[in-house]
Amino acid sequence: MELFQLRYFSAVAHQGSFTRAAESLYVAQPSLSQQIAKLETELGTRLFTRRGRAISLTDAGTVLLGYADRILALEAEAQRGVQQVVGLERGRLMLCGLPALDQQLLPPWLAEFRHAHPGIELRVRELRPSRAIARAVLSGEADLGFVHLPCQAEGLEVRPILEEPLLLVAPTGHRFQRRDCIALEEARDEEWVWVHEAQDDDHPLYSACVRAGFRPRIVCESGSAQGVVSLVRAGLGIALLPRMAIDLRAGIHAISLIGAPSRTLAVVWPVDRLSPAAEVFLKICLTNADGARSSGPTP
Image (cartoon, rainbow, N blue to C red; front, side):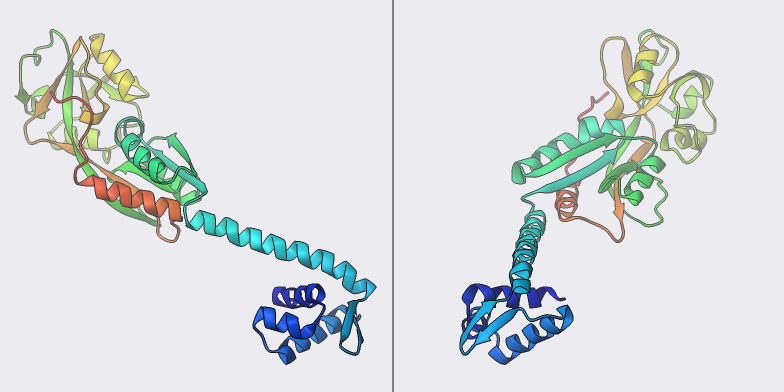
């Protein structure tokens, strides 16, 4: 039983005429009659009683018409629903990213998208480290992910969107407090406060220290950049953080580094899957990327 056969059958039943039904469907009457005959053969019963030019539904035809009309109504509803998603009238956009990105970089882009497409439900999930974000995107838990590089990219498209400087964060009274700029290697003997998951050689914070010729002597850890800043403010050590993650208040100082070590932020998505809403938001990200600036403080 084909959907178009049900459409033909319903038209004949409601029009009370094969001729009028064929005209309303813009098909040749012999073709329509042939499909009705095939449908009757498949069901093993006649659907219409024919008395000359007059036709009427059999009992079986009456039963089928109720189902056919509901099926055709569901088909029309499904088409409208899909078109609403494609036309960004409804649907859902799921994003995941590192905490600082969710708090600083994404909000104005989300506001721009929401203003243009208020019918799309937005969900933003903070997640770390970057490899966890990549897994969430690959598994379909998120449409787009925002990570720092390097990031495992098998199965993902990767597009850099922003390069952000790394800064040294020191407490008030530290020997670096009055310095405008230092070389990272000058801090090799310091005690460090560190983000827990940032202790791999491929993490931009840790690799910056390795490139400077040392591995940081970590004396205290936190699960977030905000926690790291609080620990630095308390005098437990110094820290290396991306500018976007630093909330400068009394008690800490951010110091630029010679050579300007940085981290590169990127957006990732599956190579074979990009929803209409995700495609539009991606365009917003890429359009704004060149002019994107950290809303965090400058040293």
